[in-house]
Length: 280
Length: 156
Image 1 (cartoon, each protein chain N blue to C red):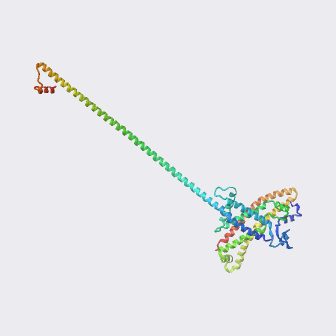
Image 2 (image 1 turned 180 degrees about the vertical axis):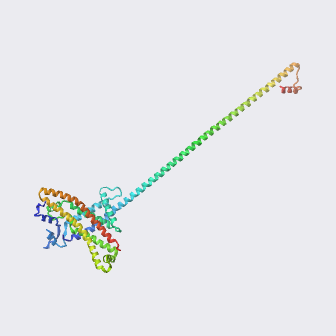
Image 3 (image 1 turned 90 degrees about the horizontal axis):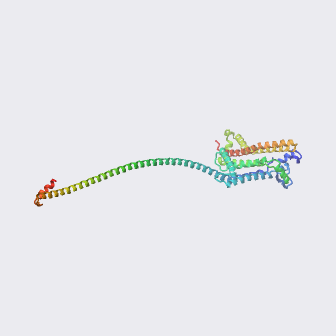
């Protein structure tokens, strides 16, 4: 499938480029053609493919779960309700295990994080060329189907969670309590600049590591799928070998996408638990 | 990897999704789960209670049966006793009646015999008087010889 590209490098670059809408250097608005153009658009541009796929998957998740919630009966659950209850009990169990305070928002937040990240990761299992090829046929120049390989998406979530952590830290401990937690430990008070630096880095590292972990895993996984897909352009032996590799990597990836969704959710719960906890 | 407004769009989307999930998805399902959990617990408790009640009822039924058997046995014993008593009474009554009838018959016989003897005595006395009259060839005055005749009658 790489045959219509001039080189492997171009193929890879094409697959890793988001469909970005923004203002061109000449002042007109439109889709960026290439990474340089997208970068030149600055901050006020939007990755249309990431937004469409993430919103679509999020709506799919909420639609399915809302449908189950509406029909939720106390009697014997069947089909969709069974599945939804299974997921919800799993999330509830995780939240009860890691979160030891009273907050009605944490469990639904964890459910949303888990299901949304999982569905976004799941797009990785679609063969890398299907949707981009269809989009090219339809005249759309770029299409990246896995939203979680876009750092904007992962950072969008982790920064929202970070602001929740800040909000609950201040709400639970008061501004002074939160500051003293940052400044007066682990070393004695007179070393407070050192404490502030240490704890500040630790605090900032939370959302960054949360976002980068998911992004890095998905980006690397996608990259390997793309590299394997390059083999389909070679001889038939190479293509056959590529097919086997793709299958094996996809099977392994089922584990990774679930695991990454679970880690993202668990860390979200743990960070919020830490925000609620009083330090001594 | 360049950051742009997708970051903000994604944050807003995320917050909206969480809000929707918190309002319309989590509570109804959790509610159903909790209610079902409670119902199952109640059902199990009711089952236990039912089993316990069944045991009690079985015990009670066995007790009742035993009492009824004992009562029936007692009734039978009493009935037998009463039957024996009735037979005994009937026997006694029959014997008494027999004795009474026997006594009446004997009295009757004795009476009849006495009467026969009396009439026989009168006839003999008559005959004796007639014989004496014939022997004396004269009329015996019954009034003058009444004491003689009475003496004779008593001797006979």
